[in-house]
Image 1 (cartoon, protein in one colour):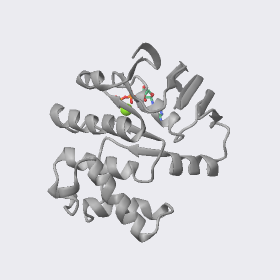
Image 2 (cartoon, rainbow, N blue to C red):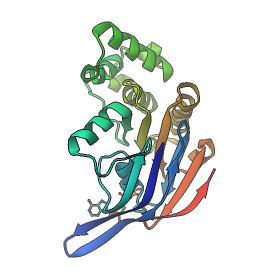
Image 3 (cartoon, helix red, strand yellow):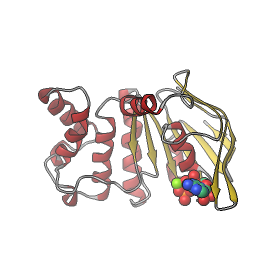
Length: 224
Ligand SMILES: Nc1ncnc2c1ncn2[C@@H]1O[C@H](COP(=O)(O)OP(=O)(O)OP(=O)(O)O)[C@@H](O)[C@H]1O
Ligand SMILES: [Mg+2]
């Protein structure tokens, strides 16, 4: 599904060069849940941003479905992100004045759905994350874990092939965090989604199909 070939990413910070990632070779299998873990500053966000075509490597190649993406034009990368990818972030960022349903439905307005199709798809996605009963609540009336599940419903509504989640559980307690990861795992098993997430939390790794550990911008361990 996604394969990186010797990718490195360095940042120029004043006169200094920061090596955020060095010679990363990883392969993400389709229909699996992959966790990237490692200490703060180890390069997790940088790596997820590269695979999600939000950023480009200084060196190396990235293949999505065997198509090389680093040489694509900005327009093509944008369309790849919009059609095939979904994103979930640490800070949940729902629209505060919209209900859970409206938050999901709004995201579908740019996709090719008519009104009836949007309604059905939004309701289906909220049901998949176990929120059919909370659909018409505002974010402030939902718990942190429920809000993050709305964000998941929003990220999967346009039927992406792959979902990137950067520390989706960082603002939740361990219990609620585990629930959220469980929802992602169910989507992998039942909907055939591919999920790549980062975490600091060691209690999450058991649920993953594959775990990569990063240290100082390098992969130091890989476990299935
Ligand atoms: N835009 C940037 N300019 C300069 N340095 C950067 C930039 N982005 C990231 N870095 C550096 O690259 C390294 C990796 O950062 P990254 O954000 O990928 O780490 P992380 O593993 O996601 O950390 P955290 O767990 O704190 O989110 C860090 O040393 C960071 O300071
Ligand atoms: Mg990070």
